[in-house]
Image (cartoon, rainbow, N blue to C red; front, side, top):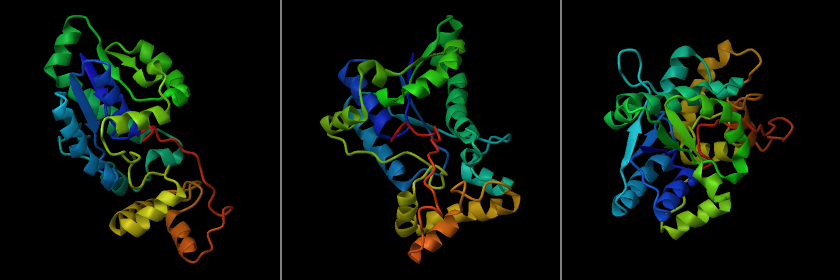
Length: 262
């Protein structure tokens, strides 16, 4: 039983292309939707689904987090209700685990082919799209991967020796457009140029991000806002006034682990 964890970014898209080219069977493709992906990610899903259908591969199965009543719970709702920022702003990975990994695991726990494989004493094989430049991510997960009683984790891009450039080339070779970076529109790992783009092209999403930041503000102590050491609201105001000096808004490197390098 081969499952692909699909993030709709460059790496996981290239991984599916490579699996087709190399004849690696795919039984299930899961996309975990936190309810707040960038618009281009949602636009890309039907494009990829069309390519998968033409190549007789499974369609993308979307899964998402639910609350105790079984109702959908988005990351945006969770932040607004709790008056907090996404966990990565505080240095944790809980939002990725809860809204990405957990919905996929929950789906598989109820998916008959997975249950049948486990009943036979077999492990389900889960394919993850880390390229050769992300070896540290694989090494950091090695101990947990090896102890997993249900899944065997496979990182085919690394096994193939594919770099980021190889992934881009594979997508071009397949005749697909390049996907954008997969992340929430209010992700604290976003770069300043991405915040600018959000403000100018998707003002409604920017305002929703600011609502999360403002809602969390009374509860913040050391963290200043969605920029972690600074607030998005302050950055955009200074940027519009051409006063956004680098020392005022340092570019943090906060890998959120919720995307696949896209």
